[in-house]
Length: 339
Ligand code: NAD
Ligand code: SER
Image (cartoon, rainbow, N blue to C red; front, side, top):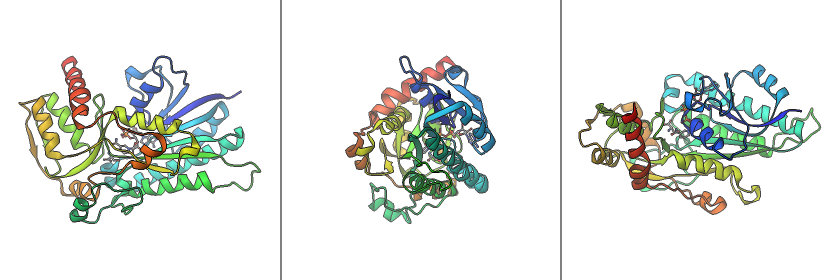
């Protein structure tokens, strides 16, 4: 008898760690199988069966399916936007080919178990590509179908994988096997995420979290985007909340495969001011990186998450004030005081 598990790829990353923490919290009866190129950090050891492995390794999955029955898959493994611009072909392999490996595996699993496999896929505001700053200023809250013209490899990968997931969910049939494929694909377009407990790497929204974590450690920080740049952000607990709310929503309530979710829109200068209020000695300057600035300029200042609110009751717990005052600043202070 195969063991029923929740599979989380990219589990050693920022969202993965927060999700594993939540899914393994007291009282939760979830069996987690996690996979990442990296080991899990010490504080999460023992909360899952962890496999250090590559999502591109199809032989590894062929072995795992003989032992495990994947009920739910959170497919988080990816190369983020800035990193992907440095290695676009590798990003395509991991972000697109890797997602295809997971979707094919989920399809076969659903045929074997004759029940749907829930497939959760975090997409991104990188799926948008706003052509000019004038349009960015005009279209303050973009809807899921607006400006789907990404300017980065990562954004192209995310937009395509949203569509690939929808294809596997609604149209794919493996004709050689006389059993229906049942993939319940659900995707969220996240804004920039900010965690109090982990630091991002390789993303373009990293200036937000980097500024706060640097100030808390008394390190100078040179911000790589302009002070007037606006982007949507979200506190990590809201990211996990939205993933779990969407995962638990009744299928019949869903009118879309892909939903925008957001916390608050904020300019770089407003982030700097909030950080300076908490850490008055912080040294924050601006050293613009024109390529990363170009990416930020192409992403929307805000996203419209009305569909998520209407269909599955989404509402963030953290606006900017609460995210900084109650979640980020106190926890980040504690973290570095301890260190
Ligand atoms: P992260 O970079 O912290 O984590 C990604 C993890 O994937 C890393 O631990 C990495 O080791 C792992 N990984 C990369 N290649 C792999 C491979 N070939 N095989 C196995 N593991 C591999 O990123 P995150 O912030 O936790 O993001 C998780 C997901 O959410 C990603 O798909 C990302 O695109 C998406 N997302 C994140 C944000 C954000 O602001 N953090 C915003 C929108 C969407
Ligand atoms: N925060 C992510 C990045 O900057 C967006 O998906 O890459």
